Length: 521
Image (cartoon, rainbow, N blue to C red):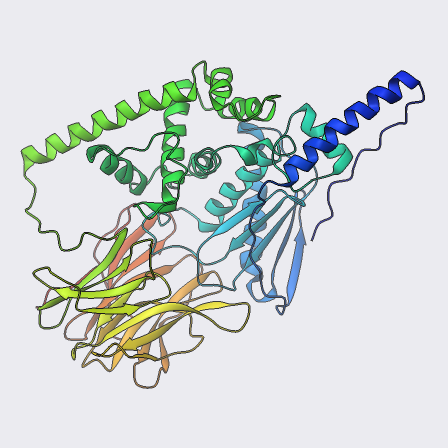
């Protein structure tokens, strides 16, 4: 969408000594460029070329979006200009030129990513993550994701004297240091910095939420708190790729609380200006007066001490006895007992094999049934012991949408809907209908699904700034308990009647109240 930044044109030297020195510098620059060109580049994703796209130009951005979600695109432009001003004041000088933002609605996934090569670009998936344990605590999804990705652009575009010289000659090469020093530092640093800023400029975000804190507390209590050389890893061990965001953001929260919020910019400057790269400890000493390694050890001790104190307090108050049913999970989610109470099904993703829905005896033991799914799948039982679940599937070459599927007792899978963009299902009645969330357009609504035909009936039409997740139909089919997000990070449980009318607000607070369930009565 955007040409590379204009290259600076230098003058030609005529003095022989200057020519000799210039040739020596060019050989050095070419060698550096060749080395840098072997480094891995950012991954990107294909968006649909068959949409009708529009572009809105602001002072600092070109925002491109499908015409049908123009309101979402305009919101993105507004949030981007605000974040640009905030980061310019609090972090580092902004990069030159306009930044491209692409807002897309081609997948029922909540995400975003940034690129600094061949130009500064941000891609945002419009779907709000109102059902996500880690991302769900937000005041405004577009604000959070754009602030996060724009912090990446500010950070990763920054370079030192050598990098500026080489960019002037070679442009924005597909390389890391010295062209883009921030790209070559550990992932916990880049993701932690951006996650910290997504929270700093709002009253929500992952630093202010409880999921990352819980993750680190659990690691500390189990004696496996990650060290610096582990915190960037994505492994089959829980929490997988989330560790870089959790450890990085809360470590930066520790540093900013201790040394002052203005030191984040000093840290980015120190990394970018290094003539000998990859020295995070040296950058830490420049910015904070202490090495990153020493600060990490101090922070680890502090997190562990607080976790131990909280566990001691819980033990005094008393904790319920639990029986562990699974041991192999990286993720073991959405456990649901069968209608007769004899089995438990759960969504499993161990990081080594395909995601599955697994069924095992309620008292524990070997898995009896496995249903392969495209990712961690939300599901429910029918009264007859079948399982209805949602999963992403390709809808043409460019789109991935969620649809409803059913698996019988033998494991045979039947597709119920096609291109319906459904998630979070709850089976009702005699197993002949269900309630699900219907995605699209940067928001969602609630629908009733005929499980025999796949026909949809709207229960709650999509609204701006109202998002639904985890509906649960009561055993008698009269009521629907559901989590409802409204502005101000208010993710509350409400109860609707079978026609979708609001009858009861169960919780009303600034918190994440997710996935209600009914007792048999």
